Amino acid sequence: MSMTTSSLPRTIGAHAVLLTYTVIALLPVIIVIVNSFKSRAAIFGAPLAPPTPKTFDLIGYTTVIGQGDFIHYFQNSLVVTVASLFFVLLFGAMAAFALSEYRFRGNSLMGLYLALGIMIPIRLATVAILQLMVMSGLVNTLTALILVYTAQGLPLAVFILSEFMKQVSDDLKNAGRIDGLSEYTIFFRLVLPLVRPSMATVAVFTMIPIWNDLWFPLILAPSEETKTVTLGAQLFLGQFVTNWNAILAALSLAIMPVLILYVIFSRQLIRGITSGAVK
Amino acid sequence: MAAAPKRPFRWHIGVFLAPAVLVYTAIMILPLAGTLQLSLFRNIDQAQVFVGLANFRTLFGDPNWSLGFWNALRNNVWFFIIHMLVQNPIGVLLAALLSSPRLRFSAFYRTAIFVPTILSFVIVGFAWKLILSPLWGVAPNLMDLVGLKSLFTPWLGKEQYALTTLSLISVWQFVGIPMMLIYAALLSIPEEVIEAAECDGITGMSQFWKIKLPLILPSIGIISILTFVGNFNAFDLIYTAQGALAGPNYSTDILGTFLYRAFFGFQLQIGDPNMGAAIATMMFLIILGGVCVYLFLVQTRLRRYQF
Image (cartoon, rainbow over all chains, first blue to last red; front, side, top):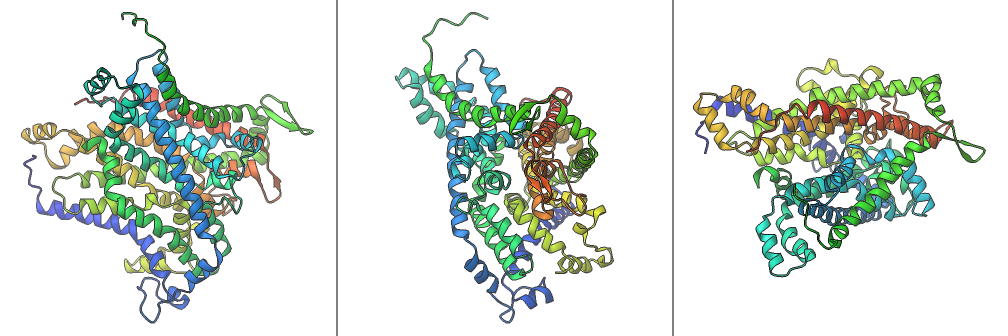
């Protein structure tokens, strides 16, 4: 262990800076959520005050739930995110295993080819992707989004996972081979469980941009049936520009599921992100 | 190197690689190539005709297009500069503070500061639009608390401030990412290195500048290039906060919104996939240029330390 005893003023300074930034990070979110529970007069009269029994009002929420089809949008987002995540993790891990485990001709070239997509955003291919989806009749389907997000997530997944798979002990895999396990069994039964923490890292990095993406739902699947929650919220907020109760309630409804999930899983998520270091 | 012994063809390698390579090639690489190709064509009488670089001559020669393009590029560069000057230093500072040994509540700080990063642009854009709105008065009220109320103006509505304000909102949202990556890099510095530094009497600030900073430079390099790619590809925040027209008076127009308008059209202008492809090609070249600068000039000069 390090033997430094950090001096008291320095500790206080560190807490002051971190606390200040925490306030900056959370205050806007808190202001929106708190005001969504207040009456219109209170929203404007005392925007920074918490709701009191006198100013408490759910009018915004009743408007939003009465009008928007949020449950449906939410389902679409969930389907798209979970399915893309599944394919990214499965295909990504398989490719990463092939690249890190076997030496074959063209190995590093293949690695470079797959890594290209980390730096070149898929958004630049939109014009031709839309043509492709129109030709194959996939416009306004969730399949189109799942395909695009799978392709988008794969490069980073392969890159991160192959780094981690290189660290899995060779002895273990060779012992498996001597016991007559097939290469597939070695991958699914020995290697995959061992790289689970790094899968969490990849899952976080893959999931957040997919859930929050506005560009591809706007272009590939803008129909009422296939709207994701991000696109739905965008259009919905546009309609209610003057109804502040409804806007604040809609924003809070969009924030809260993500926030609740995040609070529940934040320990795992953050461990996943820093697991490269902590191991 | 000795030649590998002759082995039966290893099908499993193909099986492991195939799904990823197929999806990636079909949905990303081929459309990317297709987009680059489309930029050389033009739709004349319902048919795609090869026109060479004519679309690019329009983009740079026709003032209707070139003024918009240069404006978007200039704004995008400013957007990137703000991120580099504000987001990354704050990220490094927060990570350095978080990684100090025996800091209490560090898990709480980490979790809280990362919250904006998980929210979507739509939420962030709208929430800030409301907060900065002069109608609501949250921002002036808050500024009153620190005695700066006189400085308040409707930032998002003024040409000279709107872009900087949006850049700072984006910084607010994404500061968690450099913070986490640097934090991970700082944790991976072995104890022995720190102890050795302490034996030599290097502690506190000078320990950070002389020992830790050089060791995390590769991470800072990666963050810079990720920021570059992300910024030159940004769209959602501007679209949410200011609409496709990137107002006021195009002052927040960046390449992403410019591409969207060219591709889909807006108001009186008709959407043009070929001009959209030409703009996407320019964005591709800019990003590729940035990545090459990073790979060949920056990364090769950064020393990596293996422990």
